[in-house]
Amino acid sequence: MTVPAYRRERARLPAAQRRRQIMEATAELIAERGFWGLSMQDVADRCGLTVPGLLHHVGSKDGLLVAVLEHRDAEDARSLAAQLGIGDLTAPWAGGALPPGVDLRRMCAALVRRNAGQPEIVRLFAVLEAESLAPSHPAHDYFAARQEHTLAVFAALAKDVTAEPHALARQLMAMMDGLQIQWLRSPQTNDLVQAWEDAAELLFADR
Image 1: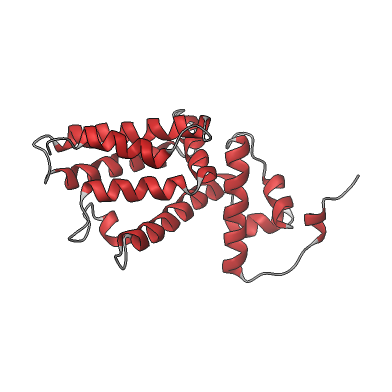
Image 2 (image 1 turned 180 degrees about the vertical axis):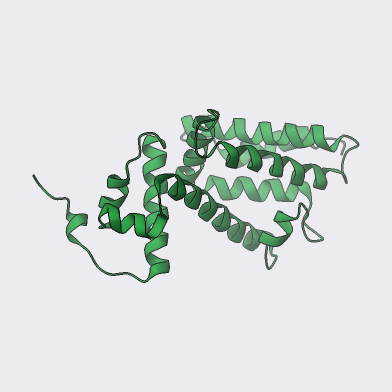
C-alpha cells in the first residue's frame, strides 16, 4: 500500500499551530464530503498525524466539529472587526449589540464581503447547516442557537430603522442565506456582493 506523502511528514508543530492546521484541514474535508462523510483517519492523514495523535488534540469527532465551528466564528469575528474598523467584535457581538457607528446595513454588507472571499467556508457552513436539521446531528444545537443569536443581533440593530425589527431580521437572514446558496451553485455567473447590494436597496427602501 502506498503511504500518502503527508503521512510521512511528521514535523512537530507548536500546539496552537497544530490545532489551527487540524481546524483548517477538517473544514476543507467537511466542505468536500459533509460531516457524515468525514473520518478521523482522513483528518489525521491530511495533518500527518495518527488517529490517537489527532484525538489527543480534539478528544472526539463530535468535539472536532464543534471546535471547527467555534474556530471559524472567531476568525470571522476578527475579520469583521477589521472591516468595520473596530477593535474587537467578539464581546459586542456576543452581547447582541455593536459599537456606535456600526449600523445594520453596514454590518450586513461587511458579512457579505467577508463570505464572498471564502467560498469554501461558506460551503462548509451550508453543508453542515443542512445536515444539522436532523436532531441527532452533533451540530444541531449549535446551529439552532446560532440562528436565534443572529436573529437577535439583527433585530437589535433593526430597531433604529423599522417598527418591525424581528420581521426585518428574518427577511435579511433569509435573503443572505438564499443569495449565498445561489452563488455557491453558480459562482461564475453570480456576484454575491452585487446581488446583496441590489437586495439591500429593496430591503432598506424608505427605512
